[in-house]
Every structure is written in C-alpha cells, then in structure tokens.
Amino acid sequence: MKKIKHNKNSISFSFFRSISMTSILFMVLLFLGISGLFLKHSFRLEGRNALQQLSYISGQFQYYLDATENYSKTILSDDTVQEYMKDYLAAKYSSNATTNVKQHIRQIIQSTPFIHSVSLYSDQGLLLVSTEPDSSQMNLSDPALSPVWRVGMKRHLNDRHKEVKVLSYIRPFYNINSGRMLGYVELSIPETQISGIYKQYNTTNELFLIDKNGQVQSSNGSPELDSQYEYMDLILKNLDSQYFFAGGNLLFFTPFSTLDWYVLNQIPIVSFLAPLFAIFCLSLLIAALVMVLCVFASHHIAQKVTYPLSYLISHIQTVKEGNWVPIREIPCNDEVASLLSSFNSMIAIQTKMRDDLIEAEKLKQQLSLNLLQQQVNPHFLYNTLDNICALAELDEKETLIQLVMNLSSFYRSSLSNGKMHISIGQELEISRAYLEILQIRYFHKFDFTITCPEALKNYSCIKLLLQPILENSIYHGIKGLDRHGILHIEAEDAGDCIRFTISDNGRGFSKEDYEKIWQQDADHFGIKSIQQRILLYYGPGYGLSMESPQTGGCITVITLPKQEGLPCH
Figure 1 (spheres, one colour):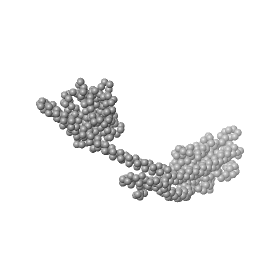
Figure 2 (cartoon, helix red, strand yellow):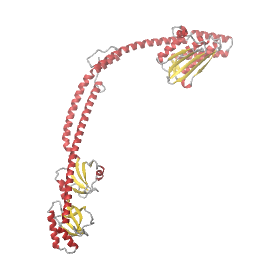
Figure 3 (cartoon, rainbow, N blue to C red):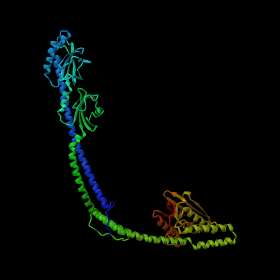
Figure 4 (cartoon, rainbow, N blue to C red):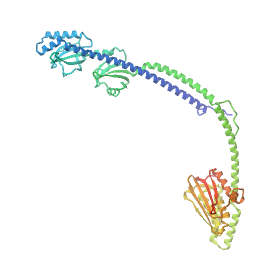
C-alpha cells in the first residue's frame, strides 16, 4: 500500500491547520477580549479618578467664590464703610478717613490668601479705596446694577511693575437705612490662587479652566493663559459623556455652572497606557506560549484522527489502479468505521454496476446488429425492385424516377455512415421517403402528413426511430382497409422534451394484439426494439406508448429529451 505524503493539500495537514488556526484564533480573541475588558476597567477607573479630581477642584473653587461673596456682604454692611461712603457723597471725606477704611477692610479679610485685594468705588465708578498698591489710576469700567464676576488684571502685591490676572466679584451696595446707592465693592481672586487648587496634584495631567468661549482662564502651566482652546467644539458635543479623545490626549471635563466655565483634566494617552504596558506584555507572552502548546496539541490530534482517513485514501489509490478489493478493518472510531464499511459496500455496488454495464453494452451491440438487419430488410428491397421493374415495363418514367430517388434517399439516410444518432429533420426525411415508396407500392392506398416546427429539426434522436412504427401502421393497420388510409406524423415541443405522435385510421388492435407487440414476436420486433433503444440511450424517464381508440386506428406517442447536436456514436 502506498504511503500518503502529508503535504499542504492533505487532509491531515488541513485538519491540523484548522485546529491550530481555531485554537490560535480563540487565544487571540480571548487575549483581545481580556485586554479590552482590562482596558475598559482601567479607563473607567481613570475616568472616575479624573472626575473626582474635577469635582474636588470645582468644590474648592466654588468655596472661594462663596467666601468672596460672603466677604463682600460683610464689607458693604460694615458701619465704618457705610459712614465713609456717606461722607464721600456729602463731600466730607478726608485722606485720613480713606486710610482708616483701608486698614479696617484689611482687618475684615484678615489677609485671606485667596483674596488679592478689595476696592471701593463711587456710584460713578471712581476708585475711592483699594488694598491694592498703586491703584490710583484704576477706575471701574461698565459698572453694573447687579453682582457680576469679571476677569481682569491687577498690580502684583510684591512687585508694582508686574500685573497678575484676577477674577473679580463686583456688586453695588446701598445705604442700609435709606436704600440709596452708595457705590460698588470689588473683591479680586488671583489666578495663582485658583491654579493652586490643582497644582497640588503631582501628575503629568494638565488641569485648567476655560470659559464658555474657549478661552483659557486658569491653568497649571499648559495651555497658556488667555489662549484659545482648540477643542471647544468637542466639549459641546460630549456634554453627556464628559470625556473625549483629541490630539493624542484623553480629556475629562465638568461644567462649572456658577461662571459658565469648564474644568478640564487632560491626560496624555501615553501616560494613560504606560501602567498597562507591562501587564499587556506579560499577557502577550502567556498567550504566545499557550498558542505554541495549541499548535503541538493540534498536530498530535490531527495525526491521530486522520490516520484512518489517510489509510482509506491510500487504499483508494490501489482501487484506482484496478485492484477492486475491500479494505481491511482497522481500529478507529464509530464514524470512520461506518465510512470504511460504506466504502466496502460501494466497492461491491461498483463491481456489480461494472458487470451490469458490460451486459448492457453487449445488449446495445446486439440491438445495433438487429437494427442494421432491419435497415437492410431484403423483403422491402425485393418488393421495391419488383415495383421498379413493373413501372419500367409500363413506361411510367416519372413514377419510376420518383421511386428510385426515394429508395436511394431512404437507404442513404438510414445507413448514415454507421452513426446511431441523426437530426430530427433527417429522421423525418427518412420517414417521408419510406412512406412515398409504400404509396407507390400500394397504389396510393393512403395519404400522409408530416408536421414539425423548424426549431425542432436541429435536435438529435436515435436513427430509424419512426420507421418501425410506420411499418406497423401500414402493414397491420391500413393495408387491410376497404377505405382510403390516412397517416399523420407530428413532432411538437413539450418543454424539456420532444413528443412524436403517429396516428392512423387503420384497424387498430385488441388487448391480445397489444400484448403480442411486447413479446418476442418477429412481426413486431421493431417496436419493442425502439422501446429498448430509447431506455438504453435516454433512461427510464422516456419511451413510447400505444393506444387504440374506440373509433379505430392507432395512436403512438414517443417522448425524447431535447438534445442539441449529434452524439459521436
């Protein structure tokens, strides 16, 4: 028995490849799934921490604003401040009074670190008192009648040549007795105090605040103050999720409704993924080792499972060489054992089919010999020659010529170089020549018609399909009539088939006559031969049928498949 090589097209290699690829795919999907879940968990944890930071910053910032508002209420309701502003309106204030009020305000705020300065303005916006150094030229622009937060610039407390960015709370205040407007109070929070809230987080993250227009109002160094934040549109699109990816960064944000600002926490993707990289590499190494083990296990399983199949394939090679012997049983599972048993059954069936085919071929050859004997029927030839002699003696030249031409056409077409298939057009031409010869022989005892669509004439059929039927109709049906005989031949399209109908007005046949037709009767051998030839060449779905109507005559129907072109045999 030949040894089967396990090349890339072998079933063993295909099975090994399938198991290996399935195992590797499973490990890859498992690795990706676990990595995805871990990444999702890390993202959720990082997001929760980032939002907690933003919540703390927002809370601390809100505390500054609330405390600033409370200090403003304390200052504007203070008796000293009230009296000073009343004196200013009455033009009774002095520089000493201004100094006293400034000192008194400083005592109220008690050097609160997140308050840069406090300023008092007249009802016209003129600066009267300020704890800010060198503020004589700073008046209030666009005073409002309601409290408002504004971003501006103030002198540095330690360096008069520098300015600092501040967030100022400005509100009008009134005489607590008469309700008359006295002026405005301004409390300023330096940006450095605001950014100091989140500078305590020693991280690579960037924390900053932007206003509703996207301008950076506070940051821990990056981005720069007063710069325009480029992803403001993404903030507005992601208000529900409160995070987005942009510029290689992961950004979390939370609205700060008091000022209509946003607090942002910008995390570089690299720093976010850095803690995951070591875990990812370790997981990848474990997955690679498992995949290698899967490959070795797949190879072992493939060899074990496919050995019986390889054995079967090797035996098939011997069968192909002509050694039709059953395969011996080998240890294997139930499914493969069933396959081997089925193979042995197939060998037995194929052997029987081969023997049957040989017998069928012998029968086919015998039928061909019988057909050739019928084609050269000596009685038909002798009778026709007698008719030719009689016509010659009577000097019937035209009839004689017609008879000779039909006889020549009949034998030329029926022999057809030994071919067993001819076109339907040729078969109908043989039938026409045959019937015209018989018309002359029986002194026009009958008439005939042949009907066939032109489209069907190019389809093929077995040779001398109709002649035995026509002979039966003439000799056993029309010949003994005391009236004129009529014979019709019609070929018609029946979908996937072609149907021939041969009908006559002859004597018909009885039930006993019908049974004799299918027996080994020399008189009707041609009809049975047609049926055998049809079954042999076309299969059991086709054939001929005969009936004798009550009105007399015989109707024969032949059904063949549509076959274009002529077979080579």
